[in-house]
Length: 619
Ligand SMILES: [Cu+2]
Image (cartoon, rainbow, N blue to C red; front, top):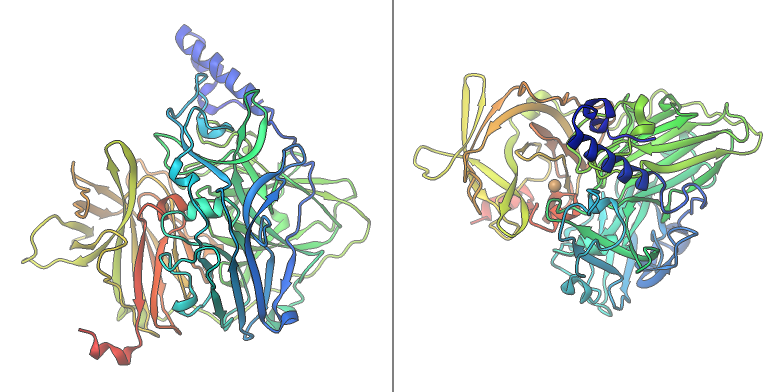
């Protein structure tokens, strides 16, 4: 039985009103604990493989409408997908061997997702509407229904020339040709490709426009790491919701639902490689799992349980966003955190397990995610409606067969990166970006980035003051919205330090296009924003380095974050410092929050990478 922590009967017994509320909550929970779909009955599907070297590096991927069954007991859903499938094909490339993809847009309407804003955040029983299927009284948004299939493809994690990076405004209507060249001059890693259209990425990705892309190289083969089936398994994790008919039966139609209090869509059903709560038969052996969180907004904290007890020690993490870590690391003690767009390369040891053994992956992360922890020992009780986590189930492994193949895990994986030297950082250009939520009357908040520049005494207007011990730095806002003037012109080959200052209550996964970066620090902060301190362009705030006494987050850097990252979680009450260096391509790129509802509502900004020789000619 899952009781929400605050609904314990003992707290309420002497207060009849509270007892009423408690009974309601229990009734609501009872309704929720039996999922409307049976978990762990569908086999985990594996995406079809498209191996670039088998096609001389020349690929054609059709982008088209299709039908997809998310669960054996659901009717087929209409989707938009690469090759008409969910997820799209798994593209496999070799380091140093360029790949050309003709992204052939053959989309046709109608748009396959019902988008709605429910009129109330909870239903009559007090259940948050985002935990429930159906439109919850919301009207289908007509502008979304009218989408006709404009798209542009971004290869997330790709070191791609700007012309082929999928700039959000350079879009292709159905029938318009898009041939993109990917040099693949980059480390082996799990990348992913997805739609990136300005303002509607949240709908197009939700409709199905996402797929995995693996870059391979001999260095990994030399380490004896599993490659391909059956021992290497890609896992694309997303959350989805579906409509219901008048009898309350699930229809299979995809629903993107937000509500007046939560502008992100957190859907109740977890889908892995396109199936709700699937099961994978595994041999007693070591498996390599290539995991991506491809959800719009949901963060997962993945926990592995056998017989109800955590078995995280079976998992060794060997890689992150841009490939292998220097050495293998255990996953964090309370589970593997993956915010939207983060990846993990995992070795999981099933070799000592008897046939018939089962291990279950659960999610313990609340939504919206704010960095809060959840005890791993309590993972079976993670279901919590208020946390928009009605069903923690993700995936089950079932052991079959007798063969035992345990692979030794190399103690050293790679040596091709290290933290930049202190002297390079000391002379590095520093940039500061505040993440703010601008509340608006009668419409959803705008999540924005405020690019900051050090203010001089002559500058008027509001200020952002950052107090570090006895030293105060004062900033002014130089850019607020996506279409504002570009202010970041990093020079190729030179390190910069970017400070991401979170002045909101949520964790934001911040993604930089092009080269990977490394995390340097997470500094706890406390801050004050005066009333009306967040205007359309302005920002006034006083930020003090040091922990707020009420702040329960540890602001630690996890071991698995010390690799080459392209997406980093910036928690509430913290400044994340990253070392950024662009190395290859000059051009206009973007950085943004990877919560798609945030990215589409202005949490995105451009930067232009510059060849140093051209700088003298910049006006
Ligand atoms: Cu965000």
